[in-house]
Structures are given as C-alpha cells and as structure tokens.
Length: 120
Image: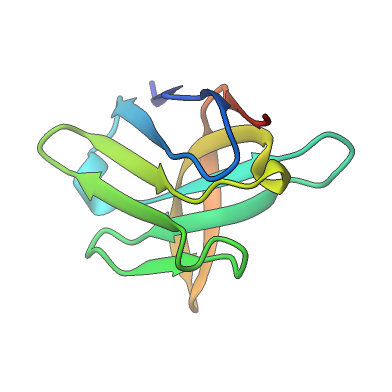
C-alpha cells in the first residue's frame, strides 16, 4: 500500500533552515507528482510546494525564494529545503502524492505529518 513517511521537522530559530524528507513506498514514485502541504493551528491546510514527475515546480507565494522542493527518484524521496524560516512557518508539514490537472496540483495520499516550530 502507499506509504509516505516524513522526517526532518523540529524546533528552529527564526532565520534558520530545515530540510524535510519524505520516503515513499508502495507505488511507482517516478511517475507521480509529489507535494508538501502545511497546517498551522487554527488555519486551513495549504499547499506549500509541489513537483511534477518531470521536475516542474510550483510554490505558494510565501515560500517563493525561501523554500525549494526537489525529488530523488532513485531513492523514492521528496525533499523540502526551507531557509530563512519565520514564526509564520510554524505548522505541521504533510507530504503527499498527487497529480497536476490543468496546472493545479491535487493530492490523493498523505503522510502523517511532521511538526516544524520556528521560535526563539
């Protein structure tokens, strides 16, 4: 069955960096788009970044220039490099599998999530 296991979350000071990883199994990783969503306390879950099977990427405006999504098909892993972190980035980050439909990323499987806390 499809499994997505996130790692790399934690506590970081404002301005710091974290790299999230998501190890995927149970499907042919290379043919699917992958993405990262986040959900902050009291807020709706939002798309942070997504990457197509061909490597095309999309980012939410708040992540542009600070976050980078990448994938390693040989390792069945997708990454989210987060730099210049702000307290507003505090959230549970979820890895997901999905597809792009007419330029819109739609996830169909989700990981359990990993907590990212940005605080001094």
